[in-house]
Length: 407
Ligand code: ACO
Image (cartoon, rainbow, N blue to C red; front, side, top):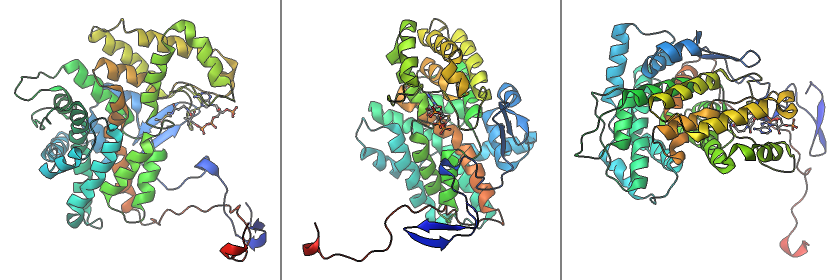
């Protein structure tokens, strides 16, 4: 809106300049040097490096270093970073009492919100957000503890004892062991599963100002604690329009069940009177194939092959669904392509990860992006509290009416 007068509650009032942009389709909330997306061309760069090269050649912790500090690490820097992350994988024993308070069938994302938020109670007095060393420590702690907390959520749901971190293992190897090992029984990390997960984590590590990252920034802009800000990000990620889509995709594919049923679901997705949407399709920024989905699609095929699960019917169903949707006018006109979540669930399922843990997997990886943005924001001299405006549509000023005079 221009520098005009706009009726607010019936009263004309000068507003100066501000934009009305529901959903922030065209509003940049900050400057950022972390991630670049070209949605028309389907390009994604982390600190300038193409996502395809990082997925092929890098590791999740190296990418985490890159996102946090802006450059690829030297061998010594990487070793020091990995040591620091490894040092912080343990969680305080008293956190177990939080889990005891959750019913066994609580959704793991609900437990994650609570338990990660509670870290701010543990570290409140030891985190000075004006001290760069304390900020780094908070960032490292969050990245290190997320897999431990995530695996504990899973074990709690199964009623099995928690498996403590084994810091001789890689980030993803350690996570797989905490998820699937039974205490006192030997457990071998499968290198195929370990690398498959590492690649998925790289692809999910950051995606500029998505809903959850913007939430972390908004909460953090008030000076809120990093652990509390990340818990807010976890809550925002959970919705099916964002990170919750990976869980919704798998449930949708299972519901479709057979390629013969695809036309029925395509018709439902196109029907404006039906709230059903094709989950894992469409993206606010990508109006071309999501480059992450392209990598995951290929990766999915390779991983299933290596795990001896190539006959997984869901992959064929997903590929057929994609083919039908991409040749349909509705999807073509609206530039709706598969997004990052369309194929991830099939890989997670092949790795033995239950459907209700899919969004938790996303949260582990995205923690890197959240803390990278938090670090960038708190050291920005232009930082101001995030405080969107609104267009008021309620009643004009009116006088209170006593209870006995209403109705
Ligand atoms: N199925 C059917 N129609 C769709 C879909 C879909 N998956 N996505 C968008 N559309 C339609 C909308 O109905 C709308 O149609 P219209 O112009 O006739 O009204 C048009 O495409 C534009 O959609 P919007 O909702 O305006 O797009 P927006 O940018 O607000 O939403 C979103 C993007 C939330 C991702 C949306 O495409 C969606 O709901 N997709 C399914 C959920 C999903 O996969 N989310 C994961 C996103 S990736 C991530 O967060 C990691």
